[in-house]
Amino acid sequence: MELAKLPQLPLHTSQQKGTRTTRRKSNGAATAALLIQMASEILTASPTLRKKINITLTDLAAADKVRKELAKKSHLLI
Image (tube, rainbow, N blue to C red):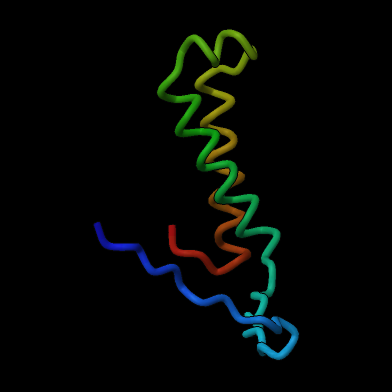
């Protein structure tokens, strides 16, 4: 039976240089539009959940209008 070889771990981790990722600039309007879209899709597909939290299809249509306005302001493609 052969012995499995384990990879060698570096002894000094402080010598390794970490790569730094750049942070992207947050876009609040774009994030809000995306969250509204996700919630609308979930609630449209689940009448039980809509009933439980007392949301109507009219409310979802109004939320979609708000989402579209936010998307325009943040230069998103609709």
